[in-house]
Length: 162
Image 1 (tube, helix red, strand yellow):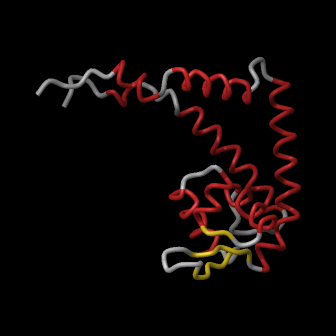
Image 2: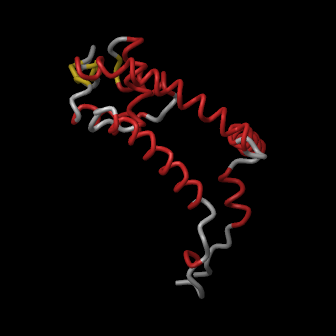
């Protein structure tokens, strides 16, 4: 144990995590107000993509969404629990093809409209604040391309003596 609790200092990521969670909760509330139960904002991207591509394996879907296999696998499991997708054996024993159910397909027009409205909202917010969120995210991404998060953490890491 070190001399002081590092978690006693405010977490610099906390405000961002809370903001993203609050924004997702508000989008989810839009779904609930429209009578759409059991659908999370994170479901929109894969459901819309599957509507436009047809059935995909989890690996193909992850690649097309630029998400990790693990993250998409977890999302697909949640989509299956909500009756939004089916999972059938794929071309080999190790893969499963994911496709929309009728319920999933019926939600796509609304999800596409919400997707567009959310993008318009982000653009509106970007115009209201002195530092556009999308620009800040892009600048952070560029800074991390110049010097990775790992490299930065290692630079500041002071390991305890044994």
